[in-house]
Image (cartoon, rainbow, N blue to C red; front, side, top):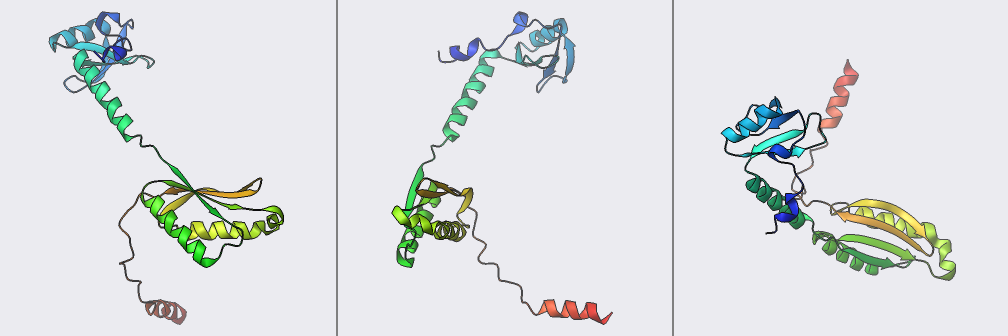
Length: 199
């Protein structure tokens, strides 16, 4: 049985060494009990006394069927493992003087990557004397981050590493776009100002 790997991790019933324990759970009043009374309570519920927080003062225990407890634990671990999705990092390379057509083409690709849940690492590669244009490279990367602000958050601002200047972006949790909200008419603002000046 796969539960065996979890079995030795908890003290149960008579294995619990503390003189008193705090009991938490559904059908028991949560409070501190002497160990003898806690064991009797577990017996009354036809369940086990399971130590779930041995380092707490006093240790925290739960009255539950131990095999059911192990099953729940295993299920929780499985769910957590499933949630740990592997995140890919996609690289996008620019030259320090990338033209608009090339820039927009790469921007479109970056949007696709971010929508798929991938991180994007964009970098400007400086060849030879082009390192003199490093400010231009920084401006390019900041523009790139700005154009992707609806799709991504910046993990790391532009950093120069050798001949590369890099920026790293993570996908934002996609919510419904707020573009449908019409901007409020600007006519109201002057009225408010004039009302204040009249006083």
